[in-house]
Length: 249
Image (cartoon, rainbow, N blue to C red; front, side):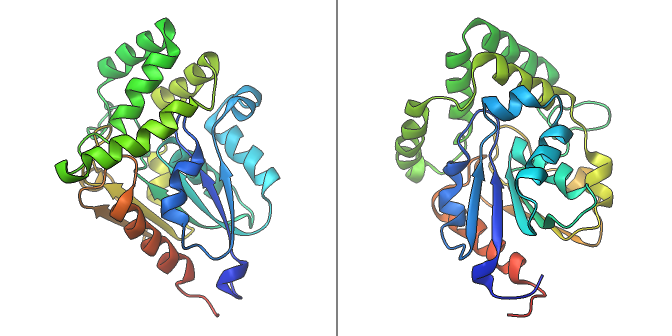
């Protein structure tokens, strides 16, 4: 990728049921065009798998770009990075995971029984279950930042989920089923994974997964599943440095 940093595009894919614009704090200093993609009803209705979502987005954003995925969005951008072509030049994940659920030799993920309990809650009351999930996005933040975190999160909770109950269930099924460990181990494209040191959903997985030489992995201390405040700015700086690395400007 050559040329001015101002010409770089960034495709930002959000997590389960949330607005991708929640990452504005991370991409605030990005100097090129930013495309926010939420995993909402249209994407979930027209695609049966994470891979199909990735292929759909490549068709929508075919021009070379950096792709950034948060939480479940990390699996989408990694699937896109695994597709041959020029759309994905570099890939960055935030609080991402190759596998969401623990088991089959994978310990950092959510316990299967916890996910099943959450699935039952979603079937009974989708909005309540979604709100409970949102609270986990900031669980574990430093006490002196908890009030501000709750205030910022409450604004997004008030706007509601980006998908309806049925589509939220499909996204949850993907979280239960998707296993990208082989892809994350062998990806050839430049990749950077920024893990959350205070993540209440999935633990940092560095000891459990080896990655290729083209991939860097970093744990951001005190970062919750939703990067916010100073941690969002830290992720933003790492994103910009990674995007510009090796460029002619």
